[in-house]
Length: 253
Length: 235
Image (cartoon, rainbow over all chains, first blue to last red; front, side, top):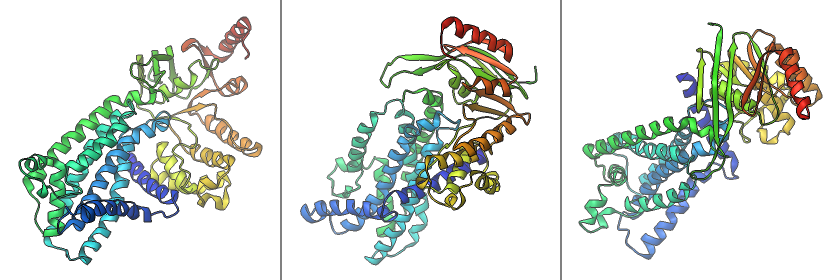
């Protein structure tokens, strides 16, 4: 049973990526073009017009938006997955968690593809590889856990209250601005800066930038705290999904 | 009693009638009691909206009862669902694998049966093309060819006995009747009384979500027809 579910999740992830590539004329190019256009907009605003970005603004922005886009996609795509698959849930007995997991894995593969390109860009603009790169998998696991924890909780509740989608989009925009994704928290005056640095996403942004731009090893205590909180969120989300699972096939269409 | 695979006792299923907070619920199944024994072919009859399809989904384990009890032996039950998980931009081959996985098959089993699926659906080179390019008839051919590969302990069929054009209907109908005749345990929901009379040993009649009568098919059909005649409803 467990092996069958693993096969189902893996093949569904492959199918999702194949289908997404086939849905548009430019296919895989959109995976890069879409975040690049978003980066261009922020760079124009903060880097050129407001000139508040600072000397390393472009690489900082590239890293921040690449990681944030991965997290946001996991939360939204994974979070809406049970709701969008309700017709399927009414026809077949499958654990509902399969659906968010497929979306999160697909978004993770897209992220790794984009992250590879990001590394090449960083090397070309003067940020060469360093030994702290070995810590990247740890940071990525923590990022995935944060996103999965939030995604599972959202996925459990949205089928019951689909209107929450409109709130979630706005909340995510606020979280992005409070996490130092498009600007450095170092430019925020105390004591607000110390408050913002308590945000787990800000910790992960800072850890990723420290590794890639300055060759700094991440703060293990901070990463551990973030991971523990995220694992707790994952377990809460999975428990809520399991509890609500019998209700999903009975919801109104 | 050890031959009883699934037993429903006074089972009720309520659905949300509206998508709103505090919205009303309606009871699609109100009070159904039935048991299914190994090797038995049970037909389910009743008017439209009686709860026949809901009952199948309870037996399949998709719906959990809101009242009453379901007891089941450790057996696999699968609803014969067509085109489960089909994705337009994927090839026939990939959709066959995806749908087979959703129907509970292991990947190695589906891959081993891909040649049989391709031969059965007679799609030729289209099997490697995205199904977005298929006609609806071609999609149903592929869907049936995948679904017929599944061999659960209990096969649940909701009206799907034959699909496609006349020639493929003959082929798919024959394949399914062969499957039902192989000693499998089957629950069949159909409006076609002739099919139920031919294929089933026992019949359950449900009405307004309640089991009215269960037993020998001739006895149940006689009572059902008498009721239809009295109420003046079309058969």
